[in-house]
Image 1 (cartoon, helix red, strand yellow):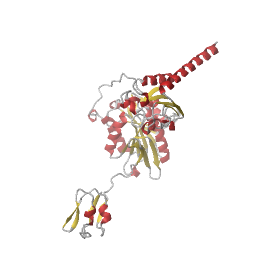
Image 2 (cartoon, helix red, strand yellow):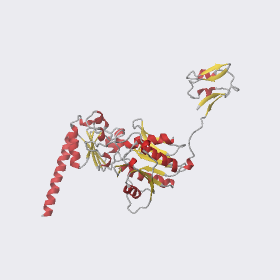
Image 3 (cartoon, rainbow, N blue to C red):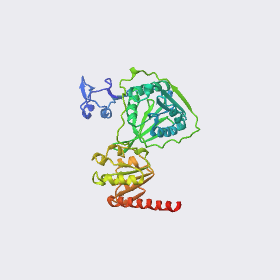
Image 4 (tube, helix red, strand yellow):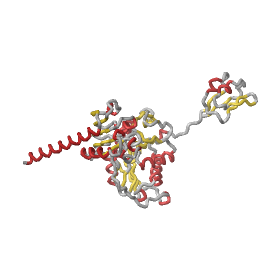
Length: 407
């Protein structure tokens, strides 16, 4: 967009020069001339008494959106095991496809994973686009991006959903750049404008202080990466029918610049927060790193895993994979116990959809109590040991009842 002076109308009055905040207008031969300092703010347009200045609208690029139909979900798998985020996206994709009256397809890349393709049908996909190749056995950026790009060019989907995993965050931008479309990253909510067939992609912005809803009106597909654990999983229906379209991708060794020589798994146990039914999280109220020993003890007693606030991760009291919140993981366990966590909006964004929230905090006015189902005002170093002791007593009682019943 640019500002243009119509010389045949300009009378050289200088009103535009006086009002321009960027000193971007000069007088040449008694006619106003716009320089490269112009930011197209429009103040000169409003002040020109003879309407000699106007904005030139640049031509909008894009595609014929009517040529694109269908909702696609990237079905991420690792070692032949389907990731939970793919099942979550199938559940959300199913809702979107039904609203738009279109087909839901799962895009599966790998080698000798026919059973995964059948599982995707049972989770709600109408069609599985299954690209089978030895070169797709392990994820590579160039290999996966080329195969999916070729499929997009051929079949023209209107929506593509990808999990915001390490792989998804690498693959999504590559694809969007190749097909010249937008990508909304780390979405926490998806809605549909049925009339215009637009996907309304909502994600936190400005540190989680507001939610931005983003549209992609002129380009296709409409692409979004979605945080794991945000959407509800699709339901498995054993007798559901669909179509598996097996594809031999046009892929050679020359297409893959970086090759995976070996996969070395970390010795550290994986912190599967998104899948945990019970999470016990510690915050700055712990006071120091040693406080997490108490959190671990309660988590073990409840059969759960340990979570943490960003403040404790930043303080290096615990590793980042434990972090829950806006810049961590989004979880929705059956039970979430927040210990010494004040409840900043960034943390709440990652756990407020938990089925039951228990908060322990010394401050009765802590924001965490506003979302908690049960709140305990007190010193966590007194409350948690009491809870552990009570749970031990319950175990003893249950053992005694079991012994009596067996006799």
